[in-house]
Length: 497
Image 1 (cartoon, rainbow, N blue to C red):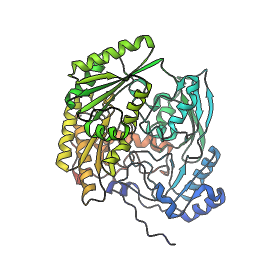
Image 2: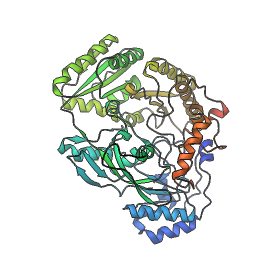
Image 3: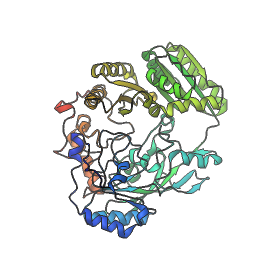
Image 4: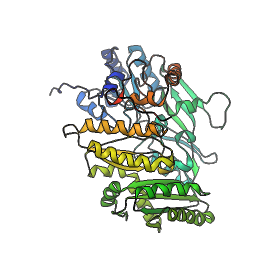
């Protein structure tokens, strides 16, 4: 049966960032037949649909092919083949990204699905060598018997992989205390964009020379492909207490965040969940979230057992100072895990409210949370969309989730307009464009509203040192001069800093 003609679905900025490929596509496909067995390459259009986008779906395009290398040497060989044929390429993990970073128009996708081994666990030095396809949560489960864990915990940690976390410098609820991915990566084995294999960093902290590991982490796959990762492991805390604080107004909940962080404690996590999300989550999880609350804070403290009571008491006192309606401790591990299941699976559960969603991850000063959330509510009403909020309140890392049905006429246009307005608000209060999801292609058009042209030029110079031909995940993270359009139909975002 012949496949139907395929046309990519790309926003204008993505269309400009990802033009059709002009390299020797037929030649590369012939190379793949020679280099890999049939069960480790996908080339038929019907099978490629599974790889047309990541978890954000406004931009979709089919790759030329998908391959499944099983070693660093194979990755290097495949990258060299792409260079010889002038074909773009990129690595893809679990596809849980939220910025279009894995969209691969007529490019070769190197899946890390078979690079999924935990190679070595060094318990005395609290380190582990892993391949990029290792699922985040699987690593923590594997080292739990040694009383260790891998601290960065994205909400998608049951599916997302270490390689993708490295590419996006992923965060998570508990990174308020423990830091984001870059704080836990010691070394990387990398296949550079020309196919050369190199090592960045090492097992010893504070190595002399340039911090190439720090440069690579968060480069969104534009500097090369990590094939082995040396991660830092963190001791499990002696004890943990989880607190649910219930508020009648969003303003009070925001004040609760400020009050908590003004005390002489550093919680492991401070998460905010609004009413829309609470109702959707409770119908699925049955964790005891109040359906009539405007918002709740999920706060966790951990550390030495002797100190926990004092930390928890300080959190409770802070919430009471913010006019909390009710505040309670999880009575046991089962209740604690249920509360966190509600938070970690909130994005998926929002599918009960609408079949599609689109989210941003702008970062703002915590003191600006009340006014920004109030403006997001006005944006919701003005654009006739539904917006749910569930986010890392302790970091000021917003996650407004715009819910919609792509089958509804005009829905996507309203979503884009609402997104433009949300980022305008973030800019106006001196915020940042992305806290953990990355720029990908979906935020390219906004980069010049947060960075000057001189800043962007310096970023391009660094990229070009690693990726001079632009074949490694092209069109992502940094706008190309002369090809970056204005968001919102030419309306420049108001910048407040």
